[in-house]
Length: 385
Ligand SMILES: Cc1cc2nc3c(=O)[nH]c(=O)nc-3n(C[C@H](O)[C@H](O)[C@H](O)COP(=O)(O)OP(=O)(O)OC[C@H]3O[C@@H](n4cnc5c(N)ncnc54)[C@H](O)[C@@H]3O)c2cc1C
Image 1: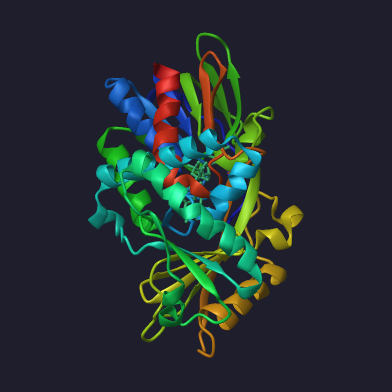
Image 2: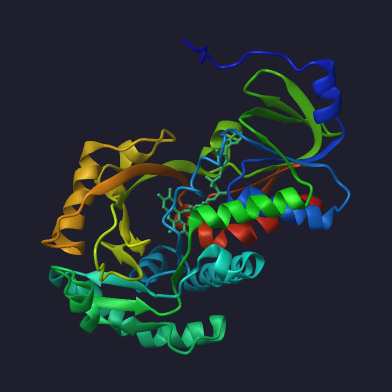
């Protein structure tokens, strides 16, 4: 029988002296934000020693477990946001998402990202006629605003006539965001990790940061193994888990469950799709459907940093797949997984100093693919600027 107990050990003199001495910058967390922060830190401090500490063998939060929507806001979501946030703040966030996406695409390239500009669609059922009409009415003004912000003349358009071509059942209306795309989240993250390695950034996977203490001349970093070392500065990019290190940061974990089907013959669905006020999302990938969401069925239970899926949400997703997305088509679910987002009372990210030598860059919500590049870069600029 193999010994699978967690390791318990202290660093040897050699390990301490070679691997953890003269460290300038530590980034905790290697999601899109941590990697973007590390890459920007390298630009700002070319000769510094930069270490990434990641608790998982892979980045295990949201960045490798999401849906890969390159989205920046559907009409109903923006209207919802405007009910609780000042309108200018909503547009400012849209602009940041858009800019973040352009930056990500420039940095990695569309071919490597497997970026497809197939559009994003919002689905409305017959009983959502009121919401649909409000959204349809808002389109001309939203398009005018976006013309200035992102330079596209008709971002949103009515697309209800396309429902039949997609094969959906029970969908009365569609609104298309013509500037929305989709990408391969795994390739995005592999590319960023390769760039970080090429930039001389050192990775330490399987090391969870347990606590941080700013001692003025630097930061004492204690790992989950019990040993500690010192770095001059730290960026915390642990998103939904940030409160474990920084209890005062207003962010909490929000799980989202996802399925992917087996390949489907002649799949008619093409694009990314938002349903039920954004609580459900699905897209095509490699001739399959990727479908996730349903957190609203059990908000309390899904406010967790534990991975896993639940019978309640699994059955809701399967029902949606069979009734609405692929009605009358037998289809097998090949895989389930979940990811952990970081959310809070407001939708904007938290990029803030915690002390003289520690900055946090967290709370990406459901839009980290779009905004993660800028959030990481701004975190590094705040720390080193
Ligand atoms: C199922 C799902 C679908 C989504 N779909 C989309 C989408 O289609 N489009 C979109 O834009 N966004 C989407 N999102 C949101 C997006 O994925 C996130 O906003 C984004 O990935 C957050 O990036 P991050 O780097 O801040 O966090 P993460 O990717 O969560 O990275 C944080 C990292 O910190 C590590 N970590 C945590 N604690 C510690 C510690 N103590 N020590 C060391 N390491 C630690 C974690 O292991 C993790 O790797 C989705 C999210 C989920 C969960």
